[in-house]
Length: 169
Image (cartoon, rainbow, N blue to C red; front, side, top):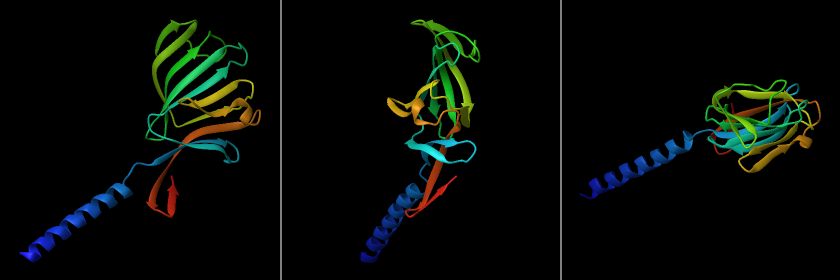
C-alpha cells in the first residue's frame, strides 16, 4: 500500500513538472517593436509589445499641412494590421476610399480597412511625423530620428529556449 502511494505521488510530480516545462518552453513569443535604419539595419529604438496593442502614427501631411492619423493593431504573427485612417482632407498620397468612410468632427475617417503589413518603411521627416504611440505612450517623436533617414518599423519575436539563451527570429 505504501509503494502504491509513493508511485501515485511520483506520477503526480512528473505530471506537474511536465506541465510546467511545457508551459515554459511553448509559451508565445516575446514581441518587440523595432525601428531600424533601412540601409544599415542598426536598431534605433525598441520596445516590448504584445499582441493586440494599438499603434498610431500621427502625421502632418507634408504638402497639405493637415493632420493624418493611422491606427494599427500588433498581431501575434509579427505584422501590423491597419484598421483606421483619419485625415482632415484629401491631397497627394492620401487614400480617398478605404474601408468604411465617414466624416466625424471635421475628419474623414476610414474604418475596417484590415490591411496587413510585415514592415512599415518611410523616409523620415522630422516635420511630417509628429509621433508614433503605443496606446497612450509615445514610442518616438518626429525629432527623435535623423531627418531624411530611411527607416523601417517591424515587430520581432523571440522565444526563450533556456533562461540564458535567447534566439531571435
